[in-house]
Amino acid sequence: MKKVLALLAALFVSSLSVFAADPACGLWKSVDDKTGKITAIWKIYEESGTLYGTIAAVVDNPQDVIASACKKSYKGFPLAGNVNEMKTVGTPWIFNMKKESEGNWSKGNIIDPGSGKMYGCVIKYLASGDKNKGYTAKEPTLAMAGTVGPIKVFQYWTQASEADIASVQEEFPAQGN
Image (cartoon, rainbow, N blue to C red; front, side, top):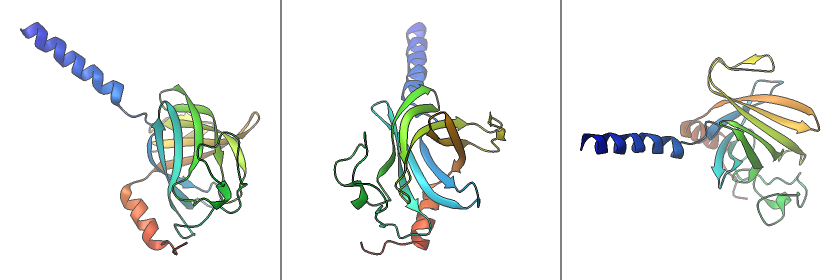
């Protein structure tokens, strides 16, 4: 009986790791690398083995702002409809990311809804103390790169919370669009 209980306990513990979310998943604050100012709060999530990212709250614009700078369509975009008529908040601007290893994703795309430009995308989760390209994470961080060919330009995003989303939404409310 003790062996059966030990076996069941071991199976339970190992099953927890199977269902644990990838460390890149969660809420993250994107930060402008020139000004250091928060630009948005993102929800990064995995669906059917693919990583996506939507903007949960946008800074300096109403929450229902339309991504009118975007083109009508983009190759591989995961939603039907005209992209240039979609709201910035809630649209999957990061899409089709493939997992390389735990916390490391690549071969997908990111669209800047403010400019309409699409880039390749690389996401790396950094635990506190981890390094990437001369940057040392002081806290859990996403090293997020937009790529053009072999060139990668990294931004470093920090963890966010539901309270951060509520604060941004209160400061920059929807305008009823």
